[in-house]
Image 1 (cartoon, rainbow, N blue to C red):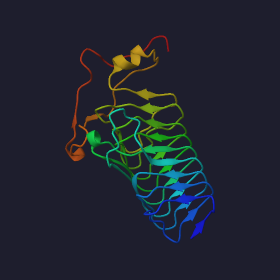
Image 2: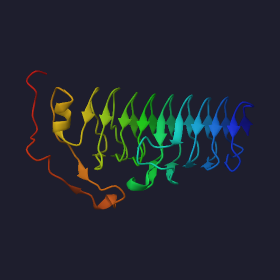
Image 3: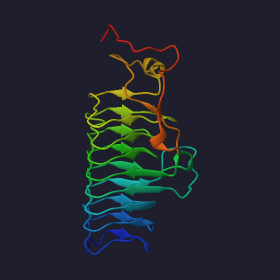
Length: 227
């Protein structure tokens, strides 16, 4: 095992001999790392977090940290990450909340670029790419091979409902997906506002039983002539 002298690994953490832990990394007592993981430097792994094999965490990534939810009261919730993911600089991944099913889950073979945020109770499949500063605000589902957020300043915001981003779907740069179009208009967003593959998923419900739902009452897809 390669552990830099400045790294802090709490008693109770599981770190295999094959892992490399760089300078100024912090690993909490309920963290379990798989084989051949690398923490380059200044990485924080916190909470009840289970991580698979061959994951690479770049500087200032913060994984399994407390959710940014005012209702969170320190309950024991989880973060689960699969194998072979690349977590780039300053990525943040929040653990789940009781009201959202209690788990934030990321699959295998994903690339999370710089400053990506995975909000609490989000579920990201495998082989997905989230580009710089892409944001999942919480309770969001991205399926396998999703190119859900391709450019910086893209946002998926869906609470309490969830959006399924389908295989090979993508959002353009500076895109925002809101719970309804009125919220987008209130924030002064311009350009085409339209509904795409969204499904109603109550937090903690069986995701396989998700059904389609209609657009918000009185709001139709429209194009802003000023765009």
